Length: 200
Image (cartoon, rainbow, N blue to C red):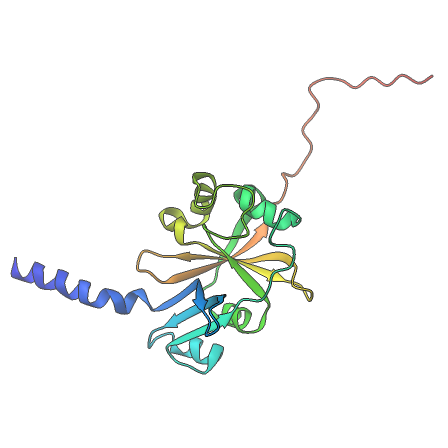
């Protein structure tokens, strides 16, 4: 029994260490002037310190301001409409990112915004609502509430592509997945009723 309690205590004490192995979050930071800025925050442990070092020359943590997203506040972006209303029907995971080099390069050099369950850009469903939660769980399972959608912006800061789905796994670190548009089924289904053309 003492061994069991010792093991549980050790796991509890080590949990914060494992929980920050490589963690990507999107949050708001209060600026000195009082305004809030949206930031992508990356936390690294010893094993992933090279990733943070590549991102911001700091081995433990990075913060990067997310740029202004043109046409995100409103209903003019067809991409955002798809992401907030039918992401699981339109996109599928193509592969898990095992080597984080491409993800780290993306986070460090591309223009992007992170969308989450409580995104201010969701004009299509209730913030934090069941419908969008269910869509995110399609990709990230029970941790769907912590999902981040990394959306690439073009040169004028308009959303152009869903680049990554970022899930938080059961030990609290970020797992990244590349996505691709779902392909329609191959072949044609025969029509159930004949077409009759009348030429005059």
